[in-house]
Length: 349
Image (tube, rainbow, N blue to C red; front, top):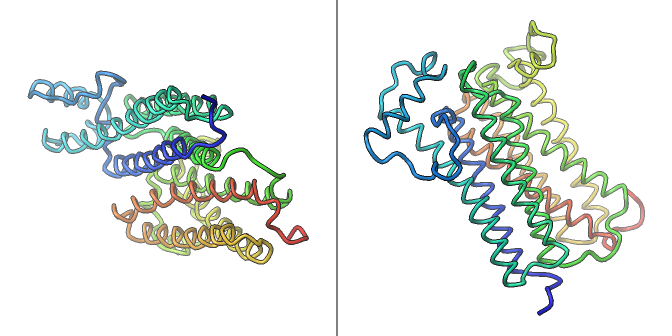
């Protein structure tokens, strides 16, 4: 039996994986907001699936947590019941990660490969998704390890790297799913100027998410909780450190940069949607661009609400989930643009 040129079954598998990645990002956000990420102090990829079952198991886990700075400096009066609360968040986060990588990516890949349902051109790409997912898990452990000895939380740059890897996996998964659904590319794609503009848009969206991770990692949303000013000023007070890491750990600086990139993204996506609506002849392409612009404005509004409510749990978590959804939608728009060579009027803009 010949391998198919396109495969709705493979596409359904990958779209399901993309959904689970967004769920993973959501649970990861909740884990961070509840300060649960350091509750499990070791990494056991296989045996770690089984949670503590006896009182002795729970005491051993709690004793391990008591050895790290977060307990002694932040939670010295924590009781077992409270520890169990943060433990379950981190355990759930790790369990979903294992499901995504081990069951969905690897298991689905093997099954569809045996059924000869994966198009030949996508076999190695799908295998790469599993490898990328495994690498994401490794970065996740390095992130946790950064907060176990000298810090009371994970290093912001490691949190940003962990999120970036998750978004990279999401982008690759959505793109491959669309490839499986529609088959091989025909035509040259959109005119060069439009393709470049769309890639820039995707970069700005991902960059904004990564900057948001630096804000979260430095708990910078807990300061300068007015808007549009920052404690009544346009610029935050200058920090005392001038080295690169010091700047990345400065609450005022990372929040200011996150705000500035948000303004740039808002202007860019609005102009992009307006010009595309005038030039494109494909209703699906225009609708996607306009929907993306509307959601970016909604995300910006949600970001302001999160800030002025001093990072209220519901608003903050919604802000992170919508960010992941925006990355998936922008990826879809970029993929559509790569095949849009016959749906543009003459002229670049």
